[in-house]
Length: 103
Image 1 (tube, one colour):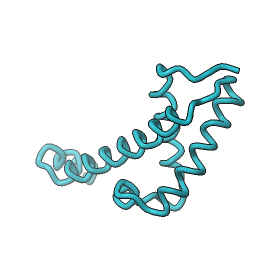
Image 2 (cartoon, helix red, strand yellow):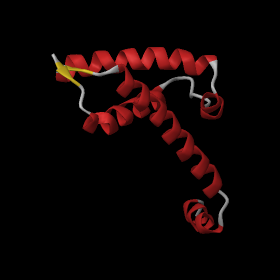
Image 3 (cartoon, helix red, strand yellow):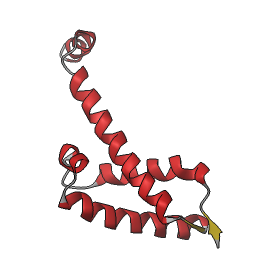
């Protein structure tokens, strides 16, 4: 049984971000970022799923600290991406792209 190394924290974070993005119906990242029952449920579900996945696929036992850090980093990453997307939608720099797409 291997113990998870900190170099794979970005891998676990990325994997969790992909899993969060797959959730249907779509997760309200603003509510989750502030804390909610949805966040608690998703945390329990995905952290267990991540530990099982890493154990089955790689034979690596993820530490609870690594999984916890990866989960909240994934939430923060998706939340920040969502904020940046919203900010950039109506900016002058992106108007030309919409005009190009609408031709």
